[in-house]
Structure formats: structure tokens, C-alpha cells
Amino acid sequence: MNRRLTTGLIIMAIIPIGLLSWMGFAGIQSEKEHREQQIQNLGNQQLEIVRDSIERVFTELEDELDQVINNTGTDIDEIRILQRNHNLIKQIFLSDQDGLIYPSADIPLSRKEEAFIARIKETDISFNFLQKSDTENPKETSLQGWHTWFMGDGLNFIYWQEKESSAHKVVIEGIELNRSALLSRIINSLPVTNEENSTIRISLFDVNGNILYQWGSWSPANNIISDSVMPLNNPVSSWHLEYFLDPGSLNTGGNRLFLAISLMTMFLVIITLSIYLYKESTREMREASQKVSFVNQVSHELKTPLTNIRMYAELLETKFTKEERKTKKQLNIIISESNRLGRLINNVLSFAKDQKNGVTFNPVRSVPDEIIKGTLDSFSYSFKTKGIKLYTKLKATKTVLIDPDILGQILSNLISNVEKYAADGKWIKVESSLMDETFILTVRDRGPGIPENLKEKIFGPFFRVSNKLTDGVSGTGIGLSLVRTLAEIHGGSVVLLSEAASSNVGAIFQVRLKSPKEGT
Image (cartoon, rainbow, N blue to C red; front, side):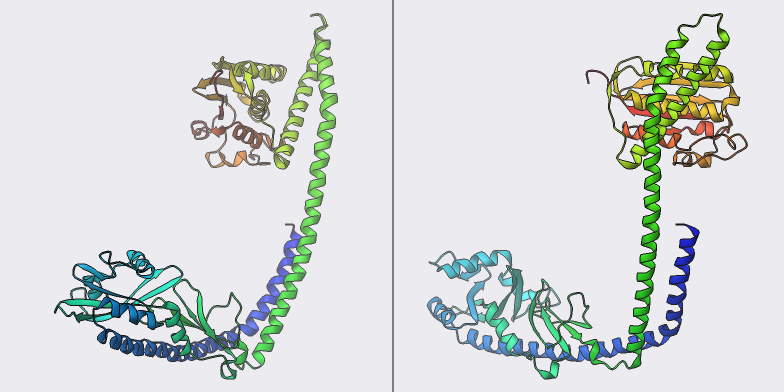
């Protein structure tokens, strides 16, 4: 982002937004807090009324079910007739300390009774469990109460009461309620939508967050958060109520208009700024793309004639005799400079490929040391003219799976750095080895070294260490970045070893490439 774009962003965004914030924040914030508190208090009052209505439904229901249980004996035929004729009763059961008395596998069962036994496998309705399920203290027992459990698509209800059987034995008689009939009774006790509640919406939610019932004419959007939430009491403690109020029903006076104008102004500023930024960024991206495309095309065009120049110069070199030393020296300069230009073009092409589609990885069966020797030969004349002594310790003599182009380009860039920035050391050492399925290449020099705090930054694109030895030396700043990229493509890595960085004398670069041995 250039300076002109930054200045425009500051002027067009910070000044109007800051001015609007200063003018409206204090008043709007105070009114907002007051309105939210007012809505919440109103919502709590409304929800308390609804909660009391639902509690009355269950209180009346308990009285009704108590009468059913008290008027029902333990005769199974009598129980079956009762539950068939009562739309609120889904199933009646009897249980004692030993388990279910009815329905049980000891007597012939209807499909409805068999379904009840299958349902209650997911919950515990044993004698002791029911007596303790409705008490806060687990050591105490209860004589009646509710038991609920979640199954299928909602909450299931059982009301039970302890009673004495005809055999003077304590049993529990329970009633599983018809969920639809119970919900219908609850809904009938709740308000309906009319003109009195045209600005509100109250919703009853189950444990899954599904709406069981709602009333009020106002329809909030799906992403609107409720103004008040209230859970219900046992046996529907997993249900809750939510209250929504239409914010337009409250008189906000002139602040609403001021807020609307402020938001519209901010919106226009943001739209204008977005259009400006879009035009600037697309223009810069288009120019950058054109530059990259141009460099890429020119590099491709240069590569073919340069290859021909180098090839014919090398052929011509073989025809000179020892007496023609001066001419041969000039020819060596042509070859050396052609090699250097070829490496530079390869770097530019590789960098452009990596930025666009990625460098192609083509491993073949090769001996790493032969690739290293071929690369070193292309630097022989440069080493000779600059007085750099080359030492090698090559131990990677076995055939492995490796990409010759990647290895050659990695080594070329590392040696080029020595040639440019560490030539005064007059010394370079190249080592190679194979360890299991890893090829290791080490390049050492005796140049000025690289500070410890820059050992990672030097691998960034276009980064160059600035000191008296590097200032004024030409270079693109992409060499080490390409080394790391190529090493990672080959399943490896490159590091500047700390033993050299800490001494500030020379640099040691170590490259590791994944290189399976032949036959593995």
C-alpha cells in the first residue's frame, strides 16, 4: 500500500468516523442502556406470569392424577380399561421393591404394553429411584412426584405415587402421560396472539431449542437475541421461555434519526473508501502481473540464444592450442559469463514458477557427487580469476533418487553467494554424504559471516544483508529464498549452522534432501 493510499484511508475513514463517534456516543449509549434495562424488566414480568400459568397446569394435573391413582386398585383389567378411556394417560404401571408388577413379562402383554417396557429401558423407574428422584437430599425419600426423561423427539413424563396394595404391600403406581395431550393442555393455558401483544413475541422452547408454542404479532429475525430468558420449574426445568420486544415500539425521539443519519454517513464513507481501495489495489496488481509476465517472457527468450552461445564457445575452446593462451582466456571469460547469466535466468524462471504454479519436481536415478562435480566445473574459471581455493569432501557416490536440476540450482546459488560476498576469504569447501534416505550437502566459506539474528531472515525473498562488503555488490536477493523453496520441494530443508553465525567468521549452509537409495 503506497503513501497516497495510506493518506486517503486516514482522511476518509478516521476523521468522519471519529467526529460522529464524538458527537453521538455519549447520548446514544446512555439511551441504549436505559432502553435495554426497561425491556428486560418488562420481559421478566411477562415471563413470570407465563411461568406461573404453566405451574398451575401441573398443580391441577397432579390433583387430577392423584384422584386417578387413589380410585384405581391394582387389578390389571381395571387399569387397562382406565388407560384406554383417558386421553391424557399413555400407560399405567405398578412397581415394588422387586421390580415391575405391571406390565411385566410374567403376563400376556399388548403391543402398547410391550412398547412401554421397551421405552423405559432408557430410564430407571425402579422403586428406590423414584422415591429419591424428587428430593434434593439423596438420603430422604418422597411419596409422590414427577420423573422425566428425554427420548425420541422430546421430553417424556411420568407421575407416580406410593400406595398400599390389597395385600398390604407398599407399591408405586405411576402414569406415563401422553405428551401431545399434555402439551395441548399447557398451550390452552397460555395467551393467544391479539392486538394487546402486537409488539412482542414470547416463545416456549423445549430441551432441543425447538419452539413448542409462541404468541405475539411481532416476528423477530432469526439472528435477533431475545431480550429476556427464563427457565421453567420441575418437571419441565429443561424448557425455557424467551421474550422479544419490537424496538420500534419504544419512543426513542430524535436520537433514532440521528443514529440513522450517522450510520448512513459511515456507510457512504466505507463504500467510497472500498471503491477507491479496490481501484488502487487492482491497478497495482495488474501492473505487478504485467511486470512478472514481462520478466518471465524475456527470461525465456534469453535462455535459448544463451545456451547456443555457451555450447559453441565450449566447442571452440577445444580447438585452441596452448600457444593461443590470450584468445583462450578471452573465450573462458565468455563461457564463465554465459554460465553466470544462465544461472541468473534459471533463478528468475524458478522464482516466477514458484510464485505462479510451483516448480516442477522430476527425480531420477543419479549419483549426487557427479551432479556436484558438473556444477563445480562451471565455476572453475571464476574461482581461478578470484583466487578462491576449492576443497571438496564428496562421499555421496551411490545412486539415489534425486532431481539433478534442483540439486544443481541449489549448489549454484550457494556458490554464487560465496563468489559475491565471501571472495575475500579465498576459500570454499563443499561436502556431501548420504545418511539412510537423506542426502546432505554442506557449503563452507571464510567470508565476513552472517549475524545470528539474521539466520532466518536471509531466506526471505529480496532480503540482503547490508554491510560494507555487500553494499554495492549486485544481486537479486532471491538466491537463498530459492534454495529453501527447492529444498522443501525435494522433501528437505536448508539451515545456516549456528557454529558459523556465532563466530561471525564464514558461513556454513547445510542442505538436506530426501533421496531414497536405488532399489528401496
